[in-house]
Image (cartoon, rainbow, N blue to C red; front, side, top):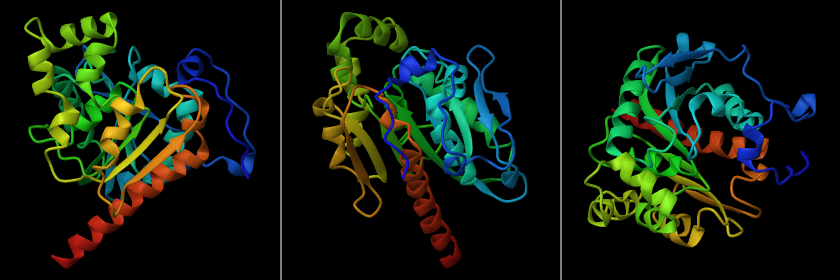
Length: 282
């Protein structure tokens, strides 16, 4: 059994270059070294990793939206995120670390356009099977959930969220610094009315349930679960959805364990299996 992860915060992990030692047998790495390709806007580039398998056989694409004040490069270099990344790549999913238009775009329409451009280029770089999944981390939860809604530049077949913001109105009211960042991301005309109209949580709850994996902790003092994940939890498709309730601080180390990687991989694989069954029935 793999010992529980230390309660190391994700942001702290981003600041270090030390790789945590894991038993060799427990490490699940892609067969080939991970190679990243730059795609999307030159002003805010995204990073794409494609398993060798996906150059010969069709694969789905996972679009990852980063936490506040982060970038695809910092996510790529995070020892913590590497555990999730490598587990998903080993499952033969291509992975796009989306810039979402910048470090603090808060799920904005402009950020979604950047994600759409990166997605368009990414899907041409391997044998894409036509299916896309979203993984949102902290602030990235807003973009990941927004990408599942009508009007997005690509269809999303399932979404996984880790300690996510999904309630844009709650983020607006949470701190003056966040409100200022949201105002800058959504444009000079942004006010509470506009934020309410574009709130991904409000919009998602008006639509049919979606396949959803939520990871959250009631100990999270940065993103209130009661105003975010707990409000979305009941909107998951009952066949595939799961709410993983953990303990510890926001983006603590237990969100980025091999076990969590397997939970995400199993979720996406089950959706792929269902999709393949439906394709064969046509």
